Length: 224
Image 1 (cartoon, rainbow, N blue to C red):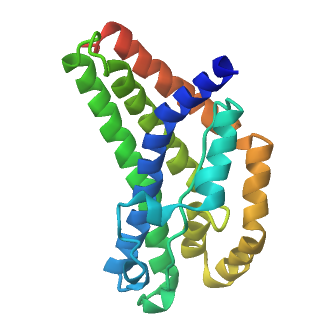
Image 2 (cartoon, rainbow, N blue to C red; image 1 turned 45 degrees about the horizontal axis):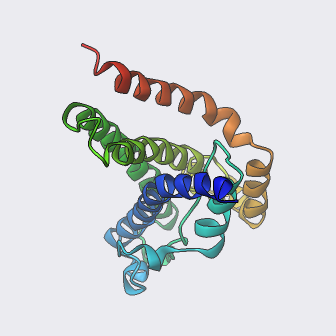
């Protein structure tokens, strides 16, 4: 029994910290841009807060990634509790929601770049025999991968994902109103995509290439 539990606990140790950072900062980015555009809703509800506890959603933060980790899925996805946004505070509600939506994936891509740079630096300065070396390297690799997954997955043009809200902000008004109505089925569509492993189909090649590059650098050092 312990032989089966230990790998799961080890995977959780490697995945959960970078996953929490990615999800929390994703939602804080939404809240911050909404606040800067004039909506105090998230700030008043203490969502401009880096404390992971205030951002935990029982299903998307705990159940979904937990099941994916337990099933040893190569694709780990999760989300924090959605940030409440009141578009009535925005001068242009539709465009305001678009900018709030864009902020989440952007912060994930920034975190992926920072994690990759820190990984390169760690290869240079952290000795391989350092007792926390494996943990540091693995956290940084997972941080790159998880932030890429969250950023790219959220850009899918399905409301209520960020990509869906971006589409509503871009489309002509009449078409945007019709497109926004997809949101009532959005949750079911997202679950169906995950169930049928659609994200793995289009994210898999990108993540495989990134992972190979990271391990190539780890094995041979940074190429000249």
